[in-house]
Image 1 (cartoon, rainbow, N blue to C red):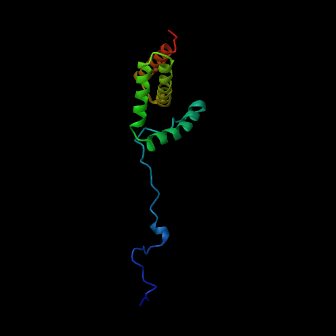
Image 2 (image 1 turned 120 degrees about the vertical axis):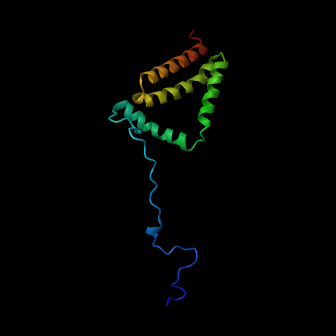
Image 3 (image 1 turned 60 degrees about the horizontal axis):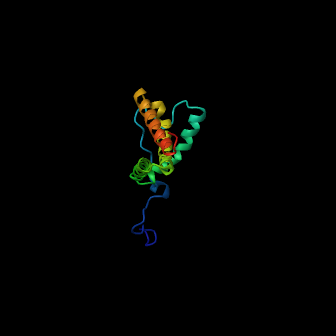
Length: 135
């Protein structure tokens, strides 16, 4: 018969510590055919993809989902509304963000997607240039 000290105490697990630990959390698997990094990338693309992983992870996990679109739209509206160099300055972060995402997604895009991104970046660059007095 077990003495009072040998019995398990209420609220305490009786299994050894190694058995109590949950299994390491496995990330959600990617859909077939998709990878986080471009396969076989070398040089600049590999470096940009590796260095972009941290800001992307922070942006999509630590910051509320609505922050990035709201900030970008606000900057874009300021760029459209203010006809001085301040408007051009407001458009520059939008150009940088869209250019960054376009660069990262470029290998997986078809011709239509590539043309759309080039057109968007060209339009935003022209808006910024007009605000700086280029035209």
